[in-house]
Length: 287
Image (tube, rainbow, N blue to C red; front, side):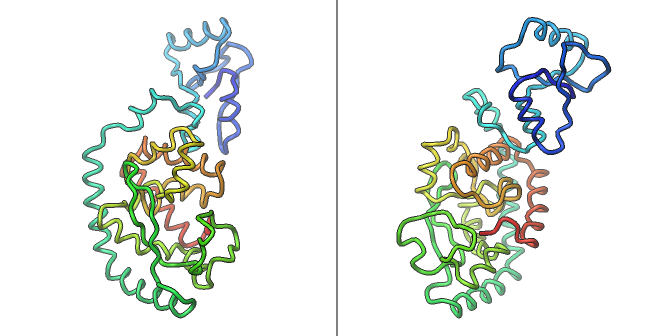
């Protein structure tokens, strides 16, 4: 691929493994697979003429935002607009129905392993610190509807006495057993119940706390669009970016979430499941 110079192209070239050559002059010196351009930036007349000549001669012309998506697995918020919304929503009724059936079947199939493991984890939590084994928290679900998500308790009882806040590295609120649970994502096992109830899916954007979601909707454009699908136990953002701390991390994860909402498919779900296994085994991104 070759590209017409622009600030967006510079962002694309900065991505890992981006195989993109920026043209110095509006001339193709050798055959190429396509020309990349950012139509949102004004072009000089010579570049406009060059672009038309490429299209007429059969050279594919690609939007810079689409190439950015392909290389990064994210939709840049800088290139989002109201015109992008219908494309993101799409028509995937059959996919959603089949995915729901698969969610239920997989949860039921996992019961012989998940139930004994849950009993063992609950026993260790009670042995390690005072308080209940399970922790219920209000999160934002599909269509922005709040629901009560359940997890194994991994923090001390008064962890949020001063209000909700992000977990930090070596967070003193996390118990000894909780560190192990969070490292290998074992604290998420009870959310299979939320999946069975239809409040969550196995795969989708992670559900955020209500207070944080309200803040992000004010600060990040298009944040609410991640709620057009069911939240998940694991997701595209989780296997790429780990735990978010602060508004900038959340902005980057939102770009991953919007990519998933736009491109969600069984192949993408399979990719996420495979990556999740690697994340669980290595413990990467845990807090």
